[in-house]
Length: 463
Image (cartoon, one colour):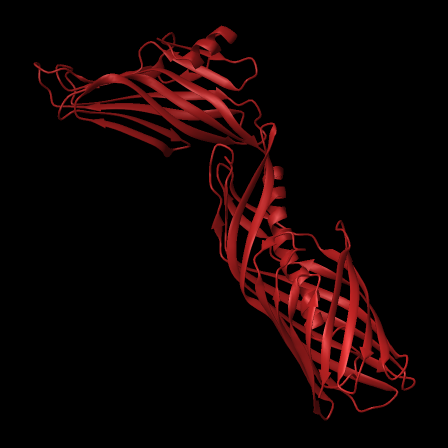
């Protein structure tokens, strides 16, 4: 009985397509017929005499037969995957073998071998891909071996039909866009943790506040401790640590520990002063889930994978302080930050749903951020003060996401440079000589993103 797929195809399009096969010893003219479905997504080739025979009374110890196929590709501009079914009959005895081998562009893509006694129908299934070509070119080689013996049957493998059905199609643009998503998610890790790190380093506090330690919590799912120590001679040390459950990044991050530290030097007290600051922040253990989407045929495929690693950022900051009186303080500065994100590679699960699975390469990616910052702090009285701050800047995307994609090959995605602006404020209430309670709110605006709001508070103890 013929396979139902082949019967449906023959019923749909019974037109023979010449030129689909060639090679006189395997599929000479008149020994095969081919049909193509009306939508161009399936092709079936039927053979009258495509076989290899050796051993027994055949007069040959080894035999090979080749048929070269050239199947039309419906959409030649992208990457197409076909399911291929080979159906036929095999007859072998002890000491005999039969094999089917398929090559594409000289490379072996399928090897099927039968050893020992077998007399039965055979069905062999495989997948094959083609990129940027209007034909799928394959060479199918049948082989048979066996000892010559007039009293034995020959080793035989014959193929009755080869069916091709298109099961996947995507474009380079779609794959690249999906890896752009991964690159943006990687970039977002450093960008979104940067706000928390700067709060650990006293960004929202008055510049000349003095030495303190504080406990804080904020709506960006962070809680921890930070502080500042006036070491003398214009030198101060800032730092802190927090547990963060990031909920704003495009990547899904597990709870992580964030650490930050910096050293600042400020010139001697006067109306105008200069300052410089260097510091670093990061997390030694980051676990993230990344996701991407791409087009396959008429459907959108969603795929994801997990990676772990670490983040380290170093920055330099320089500026001036203008204090016209004891109540007001203005700080103007520029900041340069470089972030290094080291992540393991990961493999997506390949399946019928995720046919073009990506195998993301691990390694280090970098990004640079340049910003101009402004802060105005004012004392209302002995107990109340406030700070209004703002910043504008740009993040320059560095290395992208590299991957090997099934049926496509090597591909790379890249994040875009991003402009951003931040506006925030803090109100402090000093309820005795040592203790102060601060509340703060800020919003960061980035291109194509919703405003990122953060509300928090901290309890400070001066020393």
